[in-house]
Image (cartoon, rainbow, N blue to C red; front, side, top):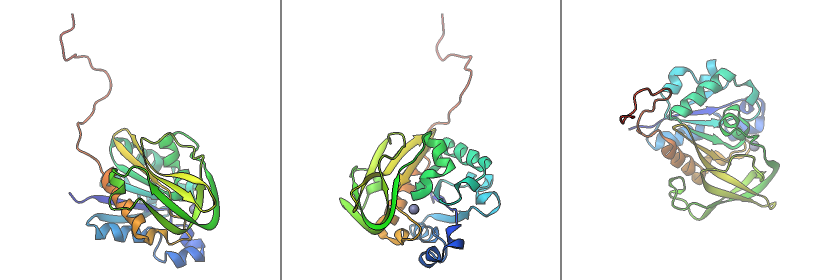
Length: 240
Ligand code: ZN
């Protein structure tokens, strides 16, 4: 089955910040979309300024995994679209939230906490350690990999304890961060992956792309039983 992936990028920094446009001339989503296509997936981009943010009922119905990058315009995402994405996650659509997406409406909604953290923009080195070496999202990686220049995110990261923790980051300045967190909500699988500040070429780095494609495969819907809720007047066994 060919996995259908929608890569949602807010797409505002590219319009307003020269530095971001230099790093990602075709948008921050473009290297991700290209790589997923190279891996045999059906990937397309959607952005905030499209009608319904590019996330119509039809698009979401035909999306197996949604990738989310946002930063400066979280509040511009309509609540009705957040409701729609949340419903699809509960139905089984996978969701991968990248970097500053930790503060997106959809991630905060699904986590139920502030999702706040420490941060610093100082171009420091990030060393990402694999702490679940048997996990499918770590497939093909070494014990760790490094990103030469990134924004720092530090603990405490105010999220629920992840069901599975795949990566822990160390930063040159001394902070650490849970940078690869797995959750399930309803039938849906959610993966939060930390790297990806908009002024660094992080989404061209092979290890980072490898994690994203592994996460797409992990988060894809599985064909479990359909579920019903509500009153159940007929018991399976005879009640005396
Ligand atoms: Zn950032």
